[in-house]
Structure formats: structure tokens, C-alpha cells
Image (cartoon, rainbow, N blue to C red; front, side):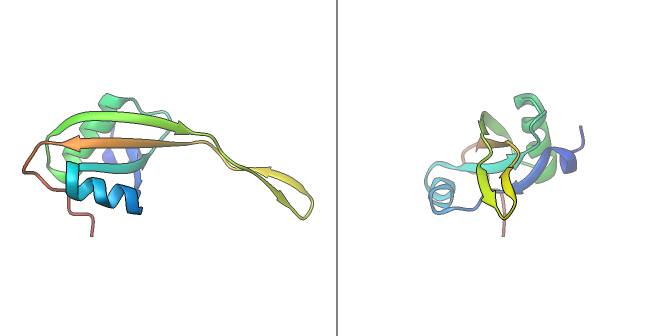
Length: 92
């Protein structure tokens, strides 16, 4: 699968930024239908690094009240990727 369809965006938060610097771990929002092997191949092809481990988490969408009722956000999938020591992904 083409990496452009797998990786939606990198998640840049305070916790993920410290994990990038300390443990060489990067966090991405990915397509919900992709498996761990699809995510691993996409990261390796897109950024040219060696991926050691991929963990995923499906996050439940929130229900919010709007003017005329309730609206539910869709579920999202978050992938945490550990790359080989000494390799870096340039996100900025």
C-alpha cells in the first residue's frame, strides 16, 4: 500500500516530542484499516528508516452536543513506531 494512504499525519504533543528525543519513538495518526506490517512498510518507505516495533491504538470518537442534537466524531487509529537507534525521522 502506498505510504500516502497509510500515514495521515504525525502527532506532535508534549509527550510524543519527549519520546522522540529520549526513546527514538514517533507517533502517527494512520488509516484505521491498516495493519502493523502496512504501517511498518509505509514508515520505512516514506522516511528511509528501519522500524523495530509498531504498536497501535484505536481511539474512540467523542460525542459532542451541537445546536440541533449530538454529533459523534469518527474513530481514529494511532501508531507508535520505534526506529533503529541512531536513525532519525525529520518531521519539521
